Image (cartoon, rainbow, N blue to C red; front, side):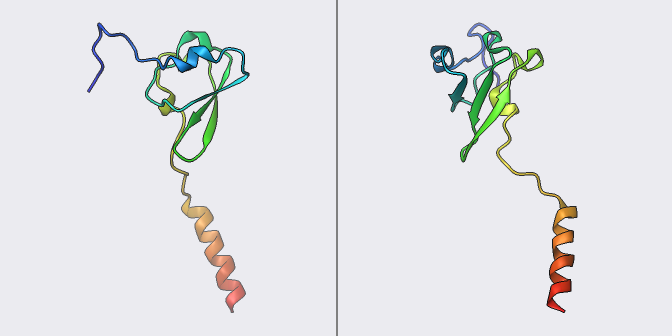
Length: 91
């Protein structure tokens, strides 16, 4: 469900407080990226670790969670190579 238009976008207040640090840490994946963070790096928490994200003009207005993935990419290609290596060593 969308947020009401009259409320405006949700931005975590802690994002504006940490202006002196070079890398800002945020736990809020649901807050919208403000224009004041252009050309800065933000560390977004995924539940396990912090992922660095560089903010540029294209990312303004989107949410932090859209650019920090919580799952690793799985490739069948890499997996099949490991199986072939293991099969050769067992013989």
